[in-house]
Length: 273
Image (cartoon, rainbow, N blue to C red; front, side, top):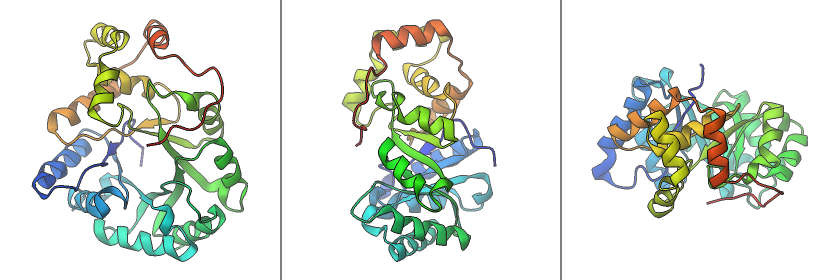
């Protein structure tokens, strides 16, 4: 399956029963509009988001590239297998396309890797990767036996949080490791409003007859091997995200954004939420 430029995030979905139908419809509309990647995790709403995803994929599993994540406390050799089975059951699917360790905990990654390789061999997952890994962790993980099969690293990345451009992003690009950008429009309403109110972003949006949010997504999309995964729970929001895939920023746009959102000048600790 060809992966879509933008994926669909599900953080905060599945938390209220009253919102479930709308969340299911939003994910299905996203599939209709070509956003084939759906990202979820066992942590989100304590499995509730995975149940929403399962309903959205009923009868449509073949249309989606499904990503989920295992919590670090469940990432032992046997624990990761058991956690995956529970995720499969919640989503009512027979496999996960890409299964990620949500972040590094106390379990050595070598042990987690054994479980991931066993799941892949059994056909329960097709590929595996990590989330919230910095460059040192990526180098250590990929040096392990089987670690060179890591397909993706999901990290916090947006216009205001560009630290990974110093070292992690080019390292992933050189090795063909997909960089999935979570919270591409920031993580809460206050931070998002600050980002989208930036005059430079609004000016670029006006030139393209687009919204600031669409420009922020297009800014991520312009880079090889980077996939933003915004969450959208309304039809209008889903359509706006999908439309961002058609935008193309030029050098004038990028230069104007760089002046307001400066690229990193040195290595910095990995941003996490």
